[in-house]
Image 1: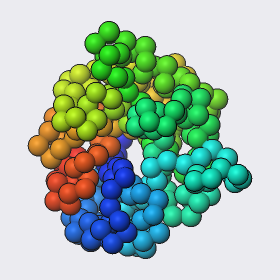
Image 2: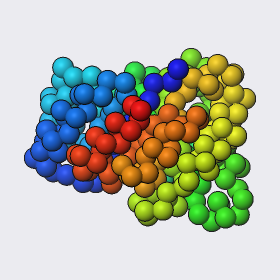
Image 3: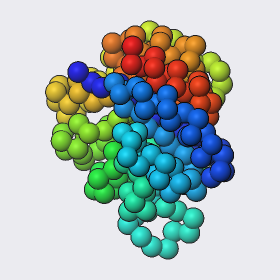
Image 4: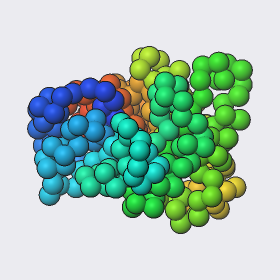
Length: 252
């Protein structure tokens, strides 16, 4: 059985003080849901403060990005060891990183390998744009992102990953994919691609999340699908009660 997994991606929101308030509001509700793996991904500036608040709980902490080099002249970047100091997880390849900051399947692959080398669990984001979706290229794009993003990994390394299927046209738009559509992409494209690369056991064991305008109102539609193991939540993770409700929905 794949344990349900829900991560909150705060993106570029919340000062340290605001982050503390948000976590204090959601912590009691989150701690009550043991059946779900819960992860918070605040901005870099809040990682130290939130790590202290989560200490002694079973709630994970993740960064939203990192560089693939261990150290060096990369002004403004964060090294894997800096993330590892506070976090267990790191989001890699988010469509906003690809769209606004020029990330490619190749750079995502370098980051994935660096994260694994430092004992971090990558949450690897994949997904097609609206134009690609409407052109019938979803399977082609998603399988390519997996093949190139997870290139040169061993089956053992791949088995520890989390994959987030986030159709780009659904992120922050209020327009979520249907549960059936998302389930079909996971079952017909993502898991078969993983099976081809790493074998059936890995493909069936890897947790695949849905992301893109997930709310408390629509979460159950995704969580009841057999191929979907949870969610990478954006805007709704900035509202304590809403995020707790999504996690509770995953437990059911």
